[in-house]
Amino acid sequence: MNNKRQNMLSQKLSNRRLLVDLLALMFGLGAWIGVNGIYVQLPLLVNEAPEGWSLPAHMVIYNKWACDKYITYVLLAAGAMSTFILAFLYDKTTIIFGNKHSTALLSLMFVTAIVGCTSSVLFMPYMRNYREIYLVSYLVGEGLSGFVPSLVALIQGVGGNPECLNITKSGSNELIPYYPEPRFSSQTFFIFIGTLLFLCFLAFLGLNNLSIAIGERVKHSANMETLPTDTRAPPSYKTNSGWAMSKQVYSYLLIMMGMVCFLGNGTLPSIQSYSCLPYGNVAYHLTVTLSSMAGPLAMCLGFVIKMPEINFLSGLMVILIALSSFVCFLAVESPTPPLQNTWLGEFLVVLSWILISGLIGFIKLGITTLFRPDPGRGLYYTGVATQIGSLIGAIITFVLVNHAKLFHSYSPCLLVAAN
Image 1 (cartoon, rainbow, N blue to C red):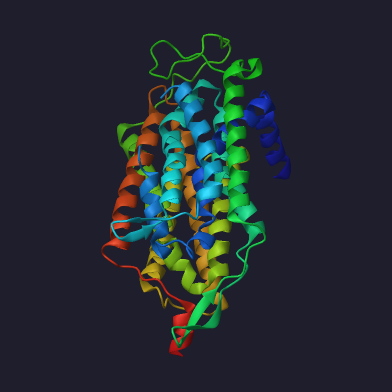
Image 2 (cartoon, rainbow, N blue to C red):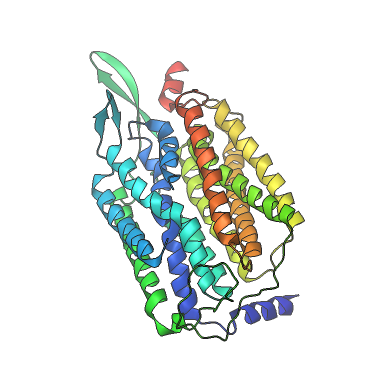
């Protein structure tokens, strides 16, 4: 069995240019690293932002605003620049309609969100210009856009759960939560993310101009509906014109992609703070960082295993819906969810989010891989399904969080005072 896996891995690594793999990976890394970098800072930001626990819902709605290599250059450059600026303005607020808002954070995140949103309808279809093996490299890079910020945030830490300090205000005593300082500031973190985005810009520059990358492009048949292909590409690599998929399966997979993104990009990130923070700041920090690592690790399986059948993906989708229902239940039960203040409760909430993230990453990889040989516009339509699902999820959850008041935040100090 081990020899079989080694032979499979050797076969996948043969007849490819590792430099092009690296460039594709870095290009994919730039897709969501700006947005993911901001999300993994949420355990630090929600305690200070005027929006409080509803900050994730405000951020998700900015992610769903919905193309040519020059536009991609502009997007990557704008993403890097906005992240550098964010490092110095993330805590600045303004008064809008009588309420204080994190205007700088949300405005600059809108710029980084444009990069992520267009990646599904622009970046990924662009990779059809290269041999199929490099799509996995791109997708792993896209997954690493969550893994890398999470790893750095894990090292950064949140300083631990808050302590309740007795403060005298206006002649009366109040219990105020005090949050210990992390190992390094959010400013340092955002500078690091901005630097990575600049490297992603350079990687895309290399994909378009290095001869070794140009040599790995494919020539598409004249009857195939594709993005324009560079005329300098050699004729030795041809796409598979014998690809076939029934209309029912085609539509079913697009609906599945829309549902996955409805949950993964729109709904679940908005309620994550409500499902995790009642179990403590450390539980929330571990959930955000470890779950962001699970997605790219699941995508890495594309290097070593054969992509699953549609029935298997359907089974994983059922598990994903069940786990998503569980964490939504915990969010609705906030501020007093089951097993609060127990190690089992913390363990279950962290494990559930890790499994959810891993399933989302693997299902998205499976669907994208099934559409990759499509001589039509399969990858484009998966991008459209991604945006539609994400947009619907973001709008619905934003309304539920900010207007229906279905979810309620909790303060550990109010609980201590009550006891």
